[in-house]
Length: 186
Image (tube, one colour):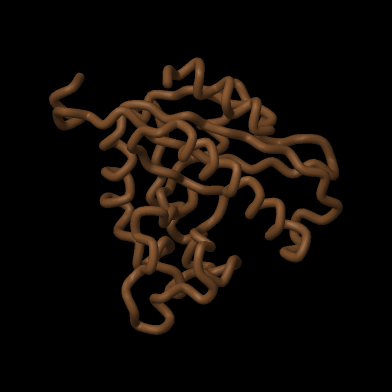
Protein backbone atom coordinates (compact mmCIF):
# COMPACT_ATOMS: atom_id res chain seq x y z
CA UNK A 1 0.00 0.00 0.00
CA UNK A 2 1.24 3.46 -0.85
CA UNK A 3 1.22 6.32 1.66
CA UNK A 4 -1.78 7.83 -0.09
CA UNK A 5 -3.63 4.50 0.14
CA UNK A 6 -2.82 4.28 3.86
CA UNK A 7 -4.29 7.75 4.41
CA UNK A 8 -7.41 6.78 2.45
CA UNK A 9 -7.76 3.57 4.46
CA UNK A 10 -7.42 5.48 7.74
CA UNK A 11 -10.20 7.86 6.73
CA UNK A 12 -12.39 4.96 5.54
CA UNK A 13 -11.95 3.24 8.90
CA UNK A 14 -13.24 6.34 10.68
CA UNK A 15 -10.23 8.39 11.72
CA UNK A 16 -10.90 12.13 11.68
CA UNK A 17 -7.57 12.81 9.95
CA UNK A 18 -4.41 11.06 8.81
CA UNK A 19 -1.08 12.25 7.45
CA UNK A 20 2.39 10.98 6.66
CA UNK A 21 5.53 12.19 8.40
CA UNK A 22 9.16 11.16 8.10
CA UNK A 23 10.20 9.67 11.41
CA UNK A 24 13.37 11.78 11.25
CA UNK A 25 11.09 14.85 11.54
CA UNK A 26 9.56 13.75 14.86
CA UNK A 27 10.65 15.61 17.98
CA UNK A 28 11.62 13.47 20.97
CA UNK A 29 11.75 15.02 24.44
CA UNK A 30 13.29 12.61 26.98
CA UNK A 31 11.96 14.79 29.83
CA UNK A 32 8.46 13.59 28.88
CA UNK A 33 9.33 10.26 30.52
CA UNK A 34 8.50 11.93 33.85
CA UNK A 35 4.84 12.03 32.69
CA UNK A 36 4.86 8.23 32.66
CA UNK A 37 6.55 8.13 36.05
CA UNK A 38 3.63 10.11 37.51
CA UNK A 39 1.60 6.95 36.74
CA UNK A 40 -1.72 8.71 36.10
CA UNK A 41 -2.79 5.77 33.92
CA UNK A 42 -1.69 3.13 36.44
CA UNK A 43 0.50 1.25 33.93
CA UNK A 44 3.96 2.38 35.09
CA UNK A 45 5.79 -0.77 36.17
CA UNK A 46 2.63 -2.80 35.54
CA UNK A 47 2.77 -3.17 31.76
CA UNK A 48 5.54 -4.46 29.49
CA UNK A 49 4.74 -1.72 26.97
CA UNK A 50 5.18 1.07 29.53
CA UNK A 51 8.16 2.42 31.43
CA UNK A 52 10.33 1.23 32.93
CA UNK A 53 9.87 -2.15 31.18
CA UNK A 54 9.49 -0.87 27.60
CA UNK A 55 13.04 0.47 27.34
CA UNK A 56 15.03 3.62 27.93
CA UNK A 57 14.19 6.87 26.17
CA UNK A 58 17.13 6.25 23.80
CA UNK A 59 15.97 2.71 23.03
CA UNK A 60 12.42 3.89 22.36
CA UNK A 61 13.61 6.63 20.01
CA UNK A 62 15.77 4.07 18.15
CA UNK A 63 12.71 1.80 17.73
CA UNK A 64 10.89 4.62 15.93
CA UNK A 65 13.85 5.77 13.84
CA UNK A 66 14.31 2.22 12.56
CA UNK A 67 11.40 3.07 10.25
CA UNK A 68 11.45 5.77 7.52
CA UNK A 69 7.85 6.95 7.64
CA UNK A 70 4.90 7.08 9.94
CA UNK A 71 1.20 7.38 9.31
CA UNK A 72 -0.21 9.64 12.01
CA UNK A 73 -3.87 9.00 12.77
CA UNK A 74 -6.19 11.26 14.72
CA UNK A 75 -9.60 10.54 16.16
CA UNK A 76 -12.00 12.99 17.80
CA UNK A 77 -14.55 12.09 20.43
CA UNK A 78 -17.36 13.83 22.27
CA UNK A 79 -16.27 13.49 25.89
CA UNK A 80 -17.81 15.64 28.63
CA UNK A 81 -14.92 15.29 31.07
CA UNK A 82 -11.53 14.42 29.54
CA UNK A 83 -10.19 13.75 33.05
CA UNK A 84 -12.79 11.04 33.73
CA UNK A 85 -11.07 7.73 32.99
CA UNK A 86 -14.45 5.97 32.77
CA UNK A 87 -15.23 8.15 29.72
CA UNK A 88 -11.72 8.15 28.26
CA UNK A 89 -10.70 4.48 28.47
CA UNK A 90 -13.39 3.13 26.09
CA UNK A 91 -12.70 5.72 23.38
CA UNK A 92 -8.93 5.23 23.65
CA UNK A 93 -9.53 1.51 23.27
CA UNK A 94 -11.62 2.13 20.14
CA UNK A 95 -8.90 4.39 18.74
CA UNK A 96 -6.24 1.73 19.33
CA UNK A 97 -8.48 -0.99 17.85
CA UNK A 98 -8.88 1.11 14.69
CA UNK A 99 -5.11 1.57 14.55
CA UNK A 100 -4.52 -2.19 14.83
CA UNK A 101 -7.17 -2.80 12.17
CA UNK A 102 -5.41 -0.42 9.78
CA UNK A 103 -2.05 -2.10 10.40
CA UNK A 104 -3.53 -5.55 9.83
CA UNK A 105 -5.10 -4.40 6.55
CA UNK A 106 -1.90 -2.65 5.43
CA UNK A 107 -0.23 -6.05 5.41
CA UNK A 108 3.33 -4.81 5.83
CA UNK A 109 5.73 -4.86 8.75
CA UNK A 110 5.73 -1.88 11.02
CA UNK A 111 5.51 -0.46 14.50
CA UNK A 112 2.29 0.58 16.23
CA UNK A 113 2.39 3.49 18.63
CA UNK A 114 -0.90 3.79 20.47
CA UNK A 115 -2.97 6.45 22.15
CA UNK A 116 -2.26 4.66 25.42
CA UNK A 117 -0.19 1.73 26.58
CA UNK A 118 -0.96 -1.80 25.51
CA UNK A 119 -4.22 -3.20 26.83
CA UNK A 120 -4.24 -6.59 25.13
CA UNK A 121 -4.07 -8.47 28.44
CA UNK A 122 -5.63 -7.57 31.76
CA UNK A 123 -3.63 -7.85 33.84
CA UNK A 124 -0.37 -7.64 31.89
CA UNK A 125 1.82 -10.72 32.29
CA UNK A 126 4.56 -8.54 33.82
CA UNK A 127 2.48 -8.35 37.01
CA UNK A 128 2.62 -12.16 37.21
CA UNK A 129 6.33 -12.35 36.40
CA UNK A 130 5.57 -14.10 33.11
CA UNK A 131 6.71 -13.21 29.58
CA UNK A 132 4.52 -11.07 27.32
CA UNK A 133 1.74 -13.19 25.80
CA UNK A 134 1.64 -11.21 22.52
CA UNK A 135 5.04 -9.56 21.96
CA UNK A 136 4.38 -9.12 18.22
CA UNK A 137 1.16 -7.17 18.93
CA UNK A 138 2.31 -5.20 21.98
CA UNK A 139 2.34 -1.42 21.57
CA UNK A 140 3.53 1.51 23.64
CA UNK A 141 2.05 4.99 23.80
CA UNK A 142 3.41 8.31 22.53
CA UNK A 143 4.53 9.27 26.05
CA UNK A 144 6.62 6.12 26.43
CA UNK A 145 8.40 7.05 23.19
CA UNK A 146 8.76 10.67 24.44
CA UNK A 147 7.24 11.98 21.20
CA UNK A 148 6.25 15.65 21.31
CA UNK A 149 2.67 15.06 20.15
CA UNK A 150 1.69 18.73 19.83
CA UNK A 151 4.66 19.36 17.53
CA UNK A 152 3.86 16.22 15.54
CA UNK A 153 0.24 17.32 15.11
CA UNK A 154 1.34 20.75 13.90
CA UNK A 155 3.79 19.25 11.39
CA UNK A 156 0.93 17.06 10.13
CA UNK A 157 -1.42 20.08 9.92
CA UNK A 158 -3.78 18.58 12.51
CA UNK A 159 -5.51 20.29 15.40
CA UNK A 160 -4.06 19.34 18.77
CA UNK A 161 -6.52 21.32 20.89
CA UNK A 162 -10.14 21.09 19.87
CA UNK A 163 -13.36 22.65 21.03
CA UNK A 164 -14.69 22.10 24.56
CA UNK A 165 -16.20 18.64 24.89
CA UNK A 166 -14.04 17.24 22.06
CA UNK A 167 -11.08 15.04 22.92
CA UNK A 168 -8.49 14.00 20.36
CA UNK A 169 -6.23 10.96 20.32
CA UNK A 170 -3.24 10.25 18.12
CA UNK A 171 -1.51 7.05 17.12
CA UNK A 172 1.14 6.13 14.58
CA UNK A 173 2.03 3.30 12.28
CA UNK A 174 5.73 3.41 11.44
CA UNK A 175 6.70 1.53 8.29
CA UNK A 176 9.35 1.15 5.56
CA UNK A 177 12.27 -0.23 7.52
CA UNK A 178 15.60 1.53 7.01
CA UNK A 179 18.33 -0.54 5.41
CA UNK A 180 21.11 1.72 6.71
CA UNK A 181 21.44 3.54 10.03
CA UNK A 182 19.70 6.93 10.15
CA UNK A 183 23.06 8.70 10.59
CA UNK A 184 24.23 7.24 7.25
CA UNK A 185 20.91 7.76 5.46
CA UNK A 186 21.18 11.54 5.45
